[in-house]
Length: 95
Image (cartoon, rainbow, N blue to C red):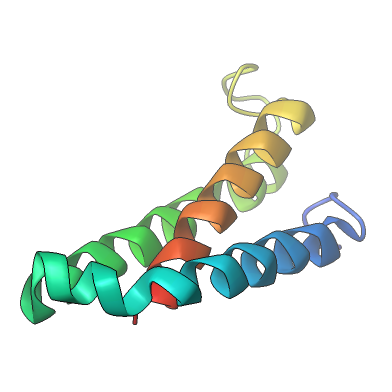
């Protein structure tokens, strides 16, 4: 994140990820039992995919400074990364 111009925002992302993982781990047994093993793995992988996809935005902003202004807004990128970290935390907690 430091290289992409977001400073120490990575610490907030990790805190959000661990926070949501902690709380979703309490419901992981019930979630796996309700959805089934393969469906829960698929949902968890899609949660992780959303986080990886959102992590591309800071690099896009850094590499293409003359691009789309909405996608390069720092506040927009931070909100998307925090939401994606929360979704990923749920997926990690399910696994």
